[in-house]
Length: 117
Image 1: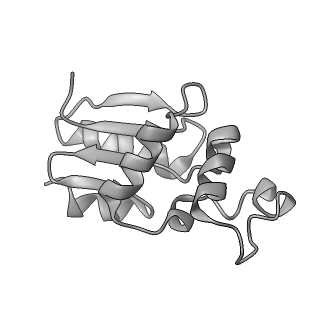
Image 2: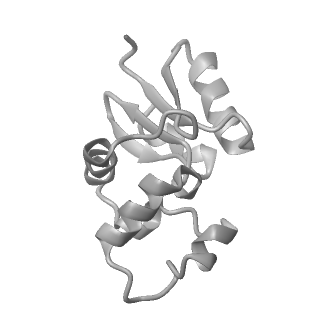
């Protein structure tokens, strides 16, 4: 198993670019296509905690479903956001990279340099 994992959506240009950058750097990461194999609650919470960011930062706010579900309301709790991401994995922002130097939402792709030499 690789020391690197990418939560990847092959239809996303940024996700494809980050995957290619890892490969160009000599790493073949473990690839989790999270739309086909979404993380469970414990894993999602662990990823968010490892990134050290607010839950809302991990939600894909540009997805139409975000507003349709009313997730843009300030009263929506972190647990409700996590519930929505688990029920609708398309709401998970991507790509998330787990590396020996840390875990990060690598958007834009240039952020990869912070955790990958």
